Length: 570
Ligand code: C2O
Image (cartoon, rainbow, N blue to C red):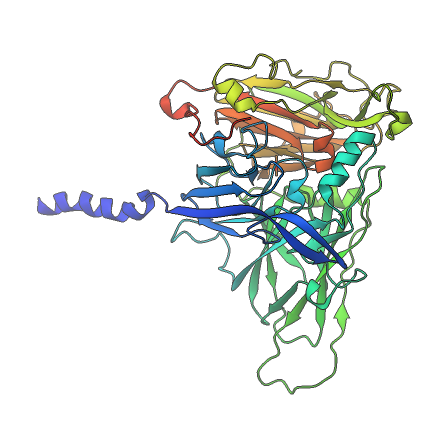
């Protein structure tokens, strides 16, 4: 009898660590100017706490984060926690004029959210104009205490964040480009953890990221592509790596020499070091995968992998040879297709792939470039004297003057947005064939409204207008499953029969193949307003974005709570 009473109590105690709410972690982000020198250019740039890259956030699944952002610079800013689901905390998502008005000079805002059901590598970045060029940093989520990785515990974990360095102020570059209609100037270097490395002119001794490793150990590299406008290949000379996670979701491990990582994507990879001191050092290098017609920065960033000398090593002054990796050709689209097809969800009982098996709402969106006419009394430097634009279903999306989420929450969408974003292209054409003569986009702040809990299938089709190009499409507020991809035009009859509904990769950013299509599915289980856009800032600025409005569900835990009292005003 007594035992019977005690048993449930013990069971309760055993469950306690699982039930215990996560920790609350406080961070303070002071947005300040800081002088930074790279490639012999010193510039004053917008940073968080004077750090470049910005501070690392480390939390655990289940934790509550309270990040107070105080804006001490002249420009407006907002911060986005890229890949965080923000379940019922859309007010903390961060894209300027979508979920909040920007934080003005002298003002502050506390981003308050809980990490639910996610663990892995993500990052945070400014989500206003091109400020994320300098304002970004890792956001690392450890599994709950006592829950191991689905792979052997690594000896050490190293964040590696790729960025883009501009010798001049990136804000000046984008404002000039938007004024003239031309393509913006490209970056002067790529960086690894803020450092360009030895392959650039005028790169100082301290400007190289060095990873010192022990022989015979396994390192977890947490890779993040925070570059503005470039997809990157990355490889380490004479070492292969094992991919174990993409966008903070575990994948079936696979080995590769080179990975492809798009802006907005993250990847965890295991690096097994050589069993014995190799008498050599190794470059790890990244350079772009580029498919568009425009110019791009085709330089190479490198860091150095060096082994600790064994204690019994007879010291010699002899310099060790430096090995360099071979990276795919700049436009190696077949590598890209092959690489992405290897990514599969782990899909185990503990980490299932909850792929929506049926579909409530189907959408077909074209993504690509286009033009806007040149305003009167101006000359423009875009294609044929126009201005460059970019669009989804030929609609280029201007930012409103007030945040969409507020307008939605208070039922004041009038004059802010319209809910008539088309589910399909209004003028179908041969998307990947000879482009039409008329390249003009239409402009509109348009959204799609989804009922709570709708299961959505979305096909993203690249177009050849002004050149086929791979576009890293990012969805806020959700992970999605990449159920299919292919080249040419999507065939709604044949292609769905080949969809993977068992173990497709689950992620938040996917490359729409150059001259091809990709199909994704997600469950609209998060009420709010969610931006979807190309994660090339150049295309984002040209209007390659739209938003989904997910309505409240019936039950209290399916409704978006009211905004926090310090939410910035426009
Ligand atoms: Cu990483 Cu809308 O952004």
